[in-house]
Image 1 (spheres, rainbow, N blue to C red):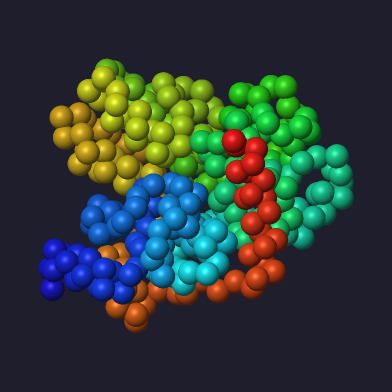
Image 2 (tube, helix red, strand yellow):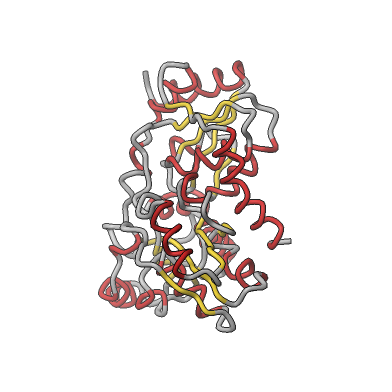
Amino acid sequence: MTIRDLQDEIIRLKKEKNICILAHAYQGQDIWEVADYIGDSFGLSQKAAEVQADTVIMCGVRFMAETVKILSPQKTVFLANATAGCPMADQMDPELIAQMKLELPEHTVVAYINTTAELKTVCDVCVTSSSAVKIIRNIPNDKILFIPDCNLGDWVAKQVSEKKLELVRGGCPTHLRMTKFDVERARKQHPKAEILMHPECHPSIVALADFVGSTTEIMSYAEKGTNSEYVIGTENSIVEHLQFKCPDKSFFPLSKDCVCHNMSATTLMDVYRTVKGIGGEEIVMSDELITSSRKCIDEMLRLGK
């Protein structure tokens, strides 16, 4: 069976079974081509809640599939590859944050969406990388405990200097692989290029970027921009996707090492086996966990209006 044959069969089966396939932006092009929606994690969860499909397959990592289930508890949700986790989401547990809340009782606990459902139950508000500045600015409290990504937290703190952010050491191992040396080399090799970077990168190199934003914001900036060359400072799959979208522009990875092995764990065959009903892992959550973890998401939506 060829890749095209496999894609055609996936498309046939998803239509036959009323399945919606979500693909995070860091998935491969072959998976993008069979997906109903492509984007950042929370945006995909919102799309899943809107569609009429009975079953949703997340091609991404576990916390993303959990968020889909939280927003669509009545739907059957599958993670296409059961091994696809997120190191940052697993860096902190509810017990740790509950203890910190006792030590910092006056602080509002803000969690990056890249957290487990269990961790969300002890947080006050969720944010995405694109909404974090607006949400935190709208929180009445000036004292914020931001988890788990201290790099994103540092970037947000610089935008909302009127707030006092307490940061906890944590972050994305993939984005932390990029260094000042990579930026210096990119400037020399591609002097006409703009460097676009995700705020999960270390503050020392975020300060050197021409544009900082979420994955979808980076892609939108590159697609709409008038420049002909861009260096991409996020997961390297985005370089390929942008090249497909904008064949007349040139895109270069900031570092060849910026590869998320958890994201690349999902294959087209995983998607095929899941739509066929012989693969993937169904996300099962108790009603109590869904209700408790959804509170901080609902607060994010309220503050983001």
